[in-house]
Image (cartoon, rainbow over all chains, first blue to last red; front, side, top):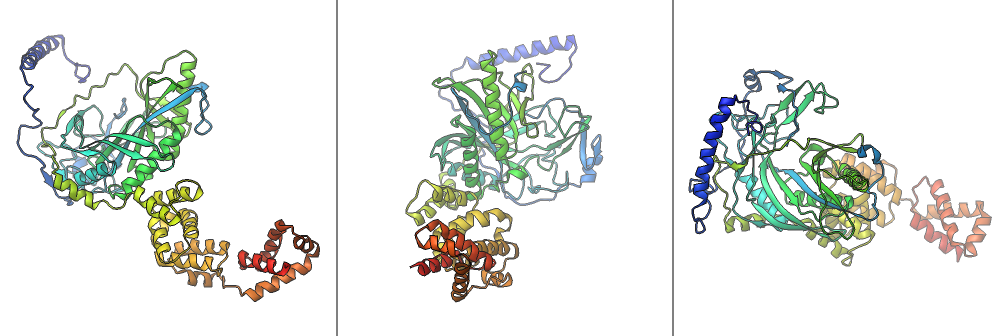
Length: 88
Length: 491
C-alpha cells in the first residue's frame, strides 16, 4: 500500500500503520455486519442537491503571479520533474 | 517481437477466420463559456496558463461549484443518444501525474448522469449500445522536453499548461458492439454529427475537442467469448482510428497464431510509424482510490428540467437525413443516400434543403453541396442559401456548364459574392445557342468521317463532338445543349 501511495516508510512506521489500518478494517467489518437492506446509500451528508453556478466568466489569475510561486517554470508553463508514468 | 512481424501497411485488412471486437470511449469537450467547476474561460488556443484560478489549480481552501450549462449539455448528449437520465454523483479519481494540480480528476464513477442508450449507424444500419455518457473534467496538457517528439521516453523534464484542466467533458462509452475499423469510423462520424447537431460540442478532432480511445480484441469466428482486449490511446483523427484498429487486430492475431497470449494493457498509437506500443508495464497496479467527492453534492435533474432540455435539442442527424431522403422518394441506400449521409455529416443539409425549398433541382443541389461546397467547408458561412440556389438554377437552366458552375461555386465560397456577379467576372456569359450551333457545324465540317459514323448510329462519338465544341468555346458551351444540337443535326 505504501508503494501504491508512493510513500517511503521506515520499518517502525510500517508496523504502526499496519496496526492502525487493521483497526480500521475491523471497524469496517463491524459496520458490514449490520443489516442495511432497508437503507438507501448516503451519497452526501448534506441534504442539498443540484448546487449550480451560471456559465459566466470570472477573472483568472495573473500568470506571472501564479508561476512566481511555482518551484520552477519555463515558457509560461510549470516545469516539473521528468514524468516516468503515462497519464491515466 | 511479434510487433515487428506485423505489417503496419494496408487499410482495414480482413483477417480470415477472425472477428475484430471494438468498443470506443469518446471524450467530448462541452461548448460552455467557462470551465466545469470555476469561471475560467473555456477556449482553445490561448496563451498557456492564462485561464487558471485557485479552483482549477487546486489551491488550498478553494471549492468547486458545478456549471449548470455543462450539466444541461451533458443531458442533451444523453437524450440525443437515447439514454436514461438519472440522478448521479461525482467521484475523485486519484493518481500521481502532474496533469491535474489537485492530484485527482473529478469524474462520475459509480453512477453516471446518462446510462443505457443507443445509436444507429446510418450506412450499416447497425444499432450500437451506449453504456454510459458521464461528466468529468479535462486534465492539463504536458509537453515533454528533451525527449523525442514530445514523448516521455528520454524526456529531461516536462512543462505543464493548466488551461485545459477543468474544461467540462462528457465521456461516451459504447458497448463492444463494433466489428471492424470501418464500423468504428462510422460510429465516430455519426456520434460527432449528433454532438454538433445537439450544439453540445464543436466536435473538432483536430483541436482535441473530440478524443477517442479504442478497446480492441479479436476472437475466432464463431467463438462467443471475448478475447483479451487492449486499450489504444492517442487517436487524433478518423484515419488514425482506422489504421490503429487494423494494426492492433493484426498484432493480436499474429500473437495468438504464434502460440502467445495477448496481455491486457494500454497501448499508444504512433501515427508516423503506424504501430501501437505498450504504454505501461503490467506489474504496475493502478489503484485510483475512487471515493465520493465530498465538495460536490449529488445531481438530481427533475423531470421538468429534462423535458425542457429535450425541447432545446434541434434536429438530430437521423431526422435531418429523413428530411433529405423525403426529397428523393425516401431513398435508403445507394449513391444518393450516401451523399445524403455525407451532407448531414458535414452540416450541409440545411443548405441543400433550403435550396430545394427555393426551387433548386434536388439532385444537383445535393451533388454540388457534397462535392464543391464540401471541399471548402471553412468558408461555408460565405455562401447564403439564396446564392447557392441561384448557382444551382443557372446550371440546371444551362446558363452555366457543369465545369463553369463548379468554378463559380468555388469563387462564391471565397468571396461571398452572388452567382451572377461571379459568372460575369469570370467571363462565363451564357453562350447563345445560335453561337453554339455555329460551332457544332464548324466541327461537323472539319470531321466528316466521324460525323458519318455518328450519323449511322455510333452514339459513343457524341462525346468526341461535345469535346471538340467545348475546346472551341473554351468550356463556355453547355454540354447538354451541344448534345441536343448534335442529335437534331443528325436526324
